[in-house]
Image 1 (tube, rainbow, N blue to C red):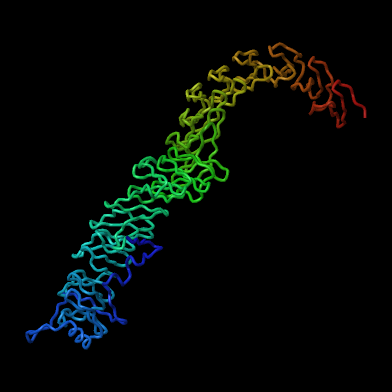
Image 2 (image 1 turned 45 degrees about the vertical axis):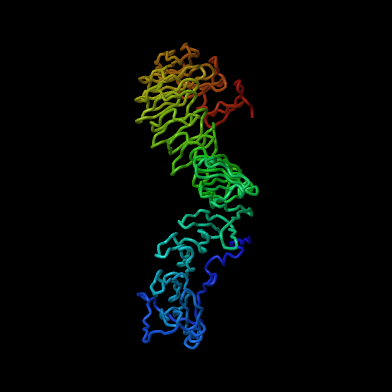
Length: 609
């Protein structure tokens, strides 16, 4: 049996749309006038005046028609199509007008019906001239197996004798039914519908082969052929190298296929929702499947849409809202819209933007939670400051809130403690957010070793890392702890010394105490100045009007309005007869008296000019 391949490459134009089909020819004059479609059924108005005694022969009728009309067809189904050179109509076997010449074209009658043309629109009439299908179509094939193959606009479909649509007019081409089947075309693809209007062979094939009777017998796809069996089924496995089970990729209505080394996806209608063009297609994760094409990675939806136009150098499967990808050497994430963000991962978590805010994801791209932040700062050891809803807190290295954002200000953890501010006051918390020192301080300075200076109601002291006030905040002023492990204090206008346990090693009785230097403190009391040891014992007698701290073993002292220099034993190194001495650093000390400069070495020996 001869086979014909109906395809865009081999005779598809013969499928439909030509004005010549089989032996039913639409005859149209060379020039046409605009004739309005009649709104009534056309019927013959000729009357017999004399009873016919004999039936003329066909040859006699043809001869008579040749004299009356410019053209006529041969007798078909009891009717003859005739034309006067302008319009067409029908006469009966006796040559009598049955249907007036009002049409712009027509076909021979067959089974009591004929296709006619009015104003470039096609319709179907019966023997009485009444419309079976009004002339509103752009083309109609003669009836086949009870249905008309019709075209309206640029779309084709099927209607029955009552004008009821068997299929929507949605096809780009269609052929009359043969053996209960009709070949249809959408775009460049072909399929087959049955007389119930079902696409029993989906419109997915490059070609459909038919036999000598135009009966569909085989399909062709990707250069492979499969027969249409007697039950109108196709063995699709013959068209692919691989055809997986539906649901294996994830969604239950799609399946993976492979042909000629490339992978694609089909749905249950066997339509290729993803054309076979990928080197691999991974199973769907969170709505997206990772694919690779020509060495570039991307992600597709179950409908086959790629989320990125650029693709990626490398990619992992989606793990929630994001997938980890690499583009241009930058590691980051991509979301379902295809938006790429470079992400620097630290401690296994990273930060991405969402709706103008920040969120935390794991290294796999999974959001740690639904929380969004105004700020996420770099980690200091194992805690990072975050800001949410205007307040600050801390996250741990897993991205979880170790300290809820409750504070108006926080400072990074120093070891196991952090300073936090709430309602204008500072406190001390541990890594779980528990208070070590309540938020009652006006200021908490950074820890030096294990103590931090605090201020509360203009009073000063020190707290330790557990929040205890080692030195009660009872002082008007207090220095940082010096090399002596003591801090200078001022209370009620008097100065003293306190140790790190809060014990007053020198009662606040002095008028002033200068910073610790060379093992001594310069102090003053009742208008006299001298030096004491850290335990409060006198080191250099109180015989000066003013003393200053030691600098590399030397200190300035004043008696009345004259200055000199002493050593740590109280010996005078430079006589007390000079103007104020400004600088004791370096190997040479310059002093001034009455405008004249004199230079001494550090042993007190004059340096000659």
